[in-house]
Length: 270
Image 1 (cartoon, helix red, strand yellow):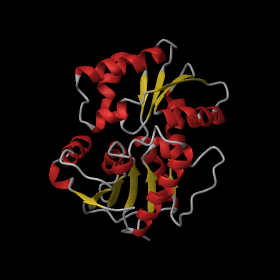
Image 2 (cartoon, one colour; image 1 turned 30 degrees about the vertical axis):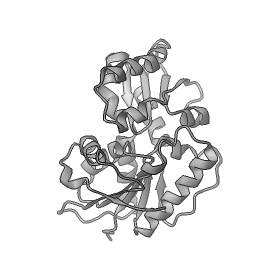
Image 3 (spheres, one colour; image 1 turned 30 degrees about the horizontal axis):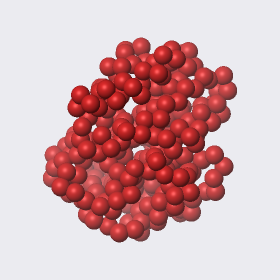
C-alpha cells in the first residue's frame, strides 16, 4: 500500500531546509510541506516551556495540512520532545533530530570524544549528552552554545568574514578538547559547514542529522510504519511561513540548492 500525502517539516526559520534538502534527495517522489516559524525565531534563546508550546502549535498546523509524518527539523524544538517530556499529541509519526544525530556521531567516532555545537536551548537541555550516554556511557561530550550563528544564516552571511571570525570563537574551544567528531546541533549550521571545517580541520568529522533522518524514514517505509508515495514522479514542495520578507525566497533557494521558482512562501497564521 502507498500513501501520497506529504511529509511535514518545521523549524523556527529556514535552517530546517538543510534537512529537507537531504531527505528530498533520498526520496524525490515524496511531497513535502515545510513550515518556517519565522515570526518567532530564533527558538534557541527561549525557555523550554515556550519552545514546547510553539512545537505543539506547529505540529497542529501541519496536521491540518494532512501530512503522513512530521519531521521536527529544529534541534531546540526536538529537545522538548525528549528527556521525559510528555509525548506530543499526533496521529502520525513525529521524528526528532537529536537521537538520529547521536547515533550517527557514535558510529563515526573512534575516540568517543564528541563535540556539540548548538543553540543555548539545545546545549542547556543536555539532550545530546543524554542521547549519547544512553548509547554509550563512556562517551566524553563537550558542548558549546553558539547563539549568533542562526541569525547570520538567516541573514545570508554564510561567507562573510565576520561570520568566519564568530565561527572560530565558538568552534576553537571544542577543537581544543581533542574531539574527533562534532555534531552540528542546529539545522542552520550545515549552511556554515565549510567555515566550521576550516576551524576543525580534516581530522574532525562533522555530523548533521539530515542523512540520519533519511535512514530512519527508509526503515519506516520498509516496515510500513509510514507508507511511501509511489515512485515515478517528482513530489510537490510547499513552503509556508509565519512571516515573510523579500530575502526569504533567496535564502531558501540557497539552502535548498535549487532555483527560486520552488521557494515562494505562503504566509500562514498560527
